[in-house]
Each structure stands twice: as structure tokens, then as C-alpha cells.
Image 1 (cartoon, one colour):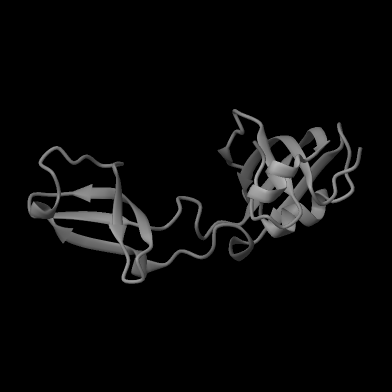
Image 2 (spheres, rainbow, N blue to C red):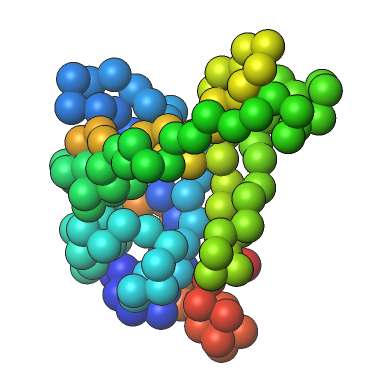
Length: 151
């Protein structure tokens, strides 16, 4: 069976930066609904179109095609007393945006008076190489198609 719209695809994969350093070893298979549902980067989905089980792939993505460019406006230094006393570096913090959307930030620095939070994805600004093998392809169920994601 070939990968096409409304098929559930399972991939084994690894992600490296352009220097070959592994940034995601793909410990678990990636399962997504193929066909523009947003479960995979567009350029990667295009490269997988028509592939079958056991086919390999290698796709180079520029930062803007992957997690986007690093945005310094998503880094903020906040008063220490706005956070719980037990806050730690690496903690995820949810903030409400003006439009009602919830944004995720990660605590990256703590000192006596301030806490620095960063809303950029850890892989922002990096050109990435996705490589792997197609493990499985099957027709999606009506329920998966209606939800726009694989079970």
C-alpha cells in the first residue's frame, strides 16, 4: 500500500541538525494521518507521498519549514514572586495570550529576583534532517478522518 491522503502512516525516524548531531533519536515510532492534517511538516509529508512499507526517506528542512526561526520576543524576564517558591529550571509554564490562546513557556533561568521564560520550541532556528523508514501504512478509519488525526 502506498502513502496517500487519508492513510495512517507509521515511521521509524531520527532527526539531526545540519552538522549531523542527533536532536531526536526517535525512541518511539511516529504515527500520523497523511493528507494535510497538520500532524507532520508539509515538506516531509510531500516527500513521503507515494512511499510504501520499508521505503527509506531523508528530508532536509530549513528552520522556517520545521519549527520556525528563533523569536527573541518569546523570551521574557519576569518577577520571581510571580512564580511558586518551588519553581525549577525546565518547568513548563502556561500563560494566557491576549487572544485567549494558552502559550507554553519553559523556565530557563532563575535568580533571586527574576525568572526567565522562553516560549520558543527547543529546535527553533535549526535546519533539520529527518531520516527513517516507513514501518506501516493503512487506510484511516472514518473516525480518524473526521478527527483529523490517527488513533
